[in-house]
Length: 233
Image 1 (cartoon, rainbow, N blue to C red):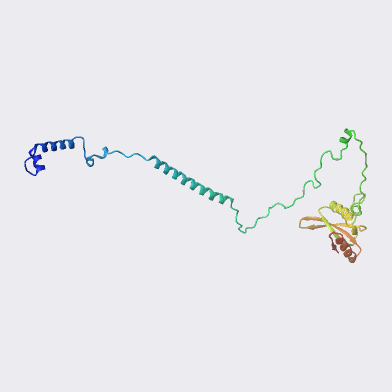
Image 2: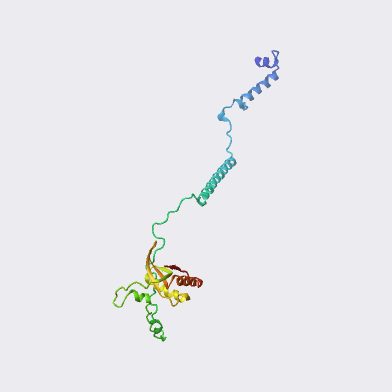
């Protein structure tokens, strides 16, 4: 007690009332009240986790990932749809022929074409017709005699070429078409001359004239009628 009195009064006599008050203050300090800077770290209250901030960071990360994926998708799509640039290279031609002759140049023959049995079955009356065989052209008669032997070549003369065909038969059929379409060819004889071109063997169809002047006049008349020709001496 004397020490407490000395501490507060500066060494003078101690009042008994003051001594009791000082002792009660010491008891409170030693009891429930504790200084916060003297407490250990374990006794401090741990702060809670801010869930709103965590969700915000997660959403930002998701948006960033979606943005990166969108940019990559746009780049890849532009690369795939971009037209190729011309580099000046030459396209190599195929090895096979550009045009080939079909196996059936006459077209497909439908079964039953010209068959009158369908009309007869339905009770219709069909008139029978006899189709006369076409008369052989002069050049065809000259190509082959009655005994099957090859005859000498067609008569000579100045030729006016009006077409070239892949076969002799096609050339003869072409002549029959041309004389019906081009009036200047009517009354003229013709010949088929076999030749060789880049595409292979061809058969040149020529109308015959008596002289070069007649051949030139005939060719001009053919062109005036809408045809094409060339004088062959």
